[in-house]
Length: 505
Ligand SMILES: Cc1cc2nc3c(=O)[nH]c(=O)nc-3n(C[C@H](O)[C@H](O)[C@H](O)COP(=O)(O)OP(=O)(O)OC[C@H]3O[C@@H](n4cnc5c(N)ncnc54)[C@H](O)[C@@H]3O)c2cc1C
Image (cartoon, rainbow, N blue to C red):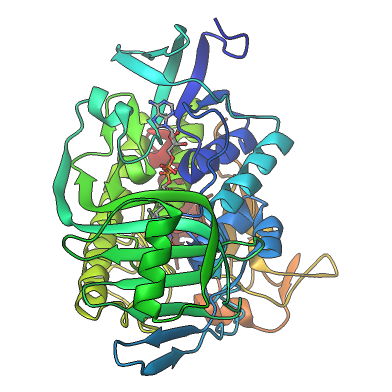
């Protein structure tokens, strides 16, 4: 029996990819007892998901890993597409400019293993660590807990279990959660991290082939390029250096590009599937275990990280005493997002296939995930604004605001939101007393009274939120607005928190 594993825990996380690690960091920050296991012998080596979208950068900022990500990442490089006739189309890689409300306007390119590295290091700083070499082989659900049996012969008893164990998820299968969708056997791609000479590291190159394309993208903070070879019917899928070299030479029509070494490789097949349900009793699934789709648009890892962020605060609150019903909102909020991501990435893949790669990096693609939100969620309350669509709404992403002065020092709203607490933003003159809000053991509340302790020096907060004096916005721990109240704010807050607690106000 492994000496690392105790037999009971509040949460067992199965899988230490970006999804499981995000969940682990968030639970560790909330002081929740959990274990995170992974069947692999150690960290995953491949670049796989290399585009981190702006909304995910905000999540990583909240978790305290943004500096590590930005240190190793860089903005997307300009893309140079060469068609079969040798004509070149250049697309700029210039990043957008940040605004007071949006600190990260563009995606950052970095290998997925760098994201995992940053999250693992944060987890260790928070006192946790991944237990490698332990595979979940079986799970049994009882009314009060889940029992997991591992490859080491151990039994782990957990109140909750989260399957972050990727597309082939054992957790999903053992829980009987249906994975709806299709596998398109004929759409295949060689993906690899390779070292190469004859190419500059300033440009993301794509060459059109007769049936597909070849792409080589420099991977920031490594000596590798990410290679993608979309295979036409009958093309050789072998993951050898010779086969990859032949495809690159033939499709680029250049003999000076020499591949020297494969650092990691995989054969990708188009699978477009998502779960019918994100939960079965005490078991949840997140990330690729819940949805898989084409890499077009760079959404997969990002969606998994945001699944984990959505679930983490709810699990932590329930373990500390909030209403069990809160956990139903995980599926309510994330299932529509997964469906949207599947539709978007499938559309982008179709365009990519039809254009032999030239449409691969359309700058008009709506992929930044900043617009995702939960307006229709049962957790989104606008008691006195049911028919007014103007301005910020409950369920929207809480925008940042720079230019704040907090106790005489420069700050931004995201600095005040960072952490596991709820934040009450009170606009204008204090129109209400915050003294009579209920106290719950699972609830950490931070009240930000604008105009007194926090000064909106540049007016960016007022612009971003557009709420009148006396209004309040309650921001959830995951950075979405739970409640907007313009009048009777105290009563609205008491009602809202009582609903989370599962009590009468
Ligand atoms: C070519 C390619 C390009 C991509 N590009 C992008 C992109 O640009 N942007 C983007 O967002 N996404 C992209 N993706 C998708 C992204 O790689 C995945 O969505 C992401 O890895 C999912 O993370 P995860 O943590 O959910 O699962 P995984 O990373 O698959 O992690 C699952 C973990 O669970 C472990 N595990 C599995 N079964 C068990 C078990 N029974 N017991 C214990 N442990 C287990 C595995 O060892 C693994 O470590 C791309 C994917 C590919 C293939």
